[in-house]
Image (cartoon, rainbow, N blue to C red; front, side):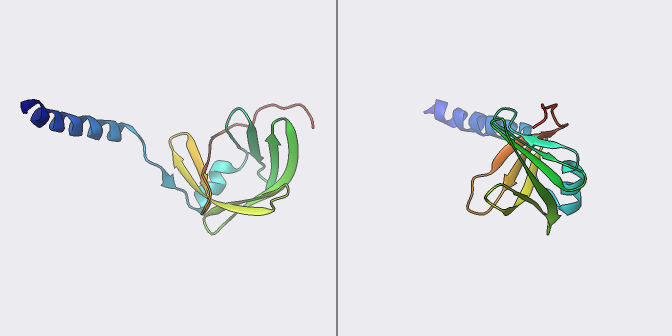
Length: 122
């Protein structure tokens, strides 16, 4: 019985210290989105990458196939237009180097922002 009494405070203390070590996500506003994405690549580092040109151009690479489009920021959301899906807008959430693009009713797109990778001409 005594073990249960001691286990609870230890369990709570471990949970609180683990929670403090994990950065929470915060939502970016329009100007932050523009400054972070312009000239950068959003990628999962394996299957896909979106390269955001400073001029609003967008280059999408999925499993070696390339596609062109555009991007802009509207009402604190990142809006991309390429491929068959047309214009799609997302909230942008960050935690350290991790980025999530969130859209109602959809699972988030998880990736990182980094300098664009060198790719062979398409």
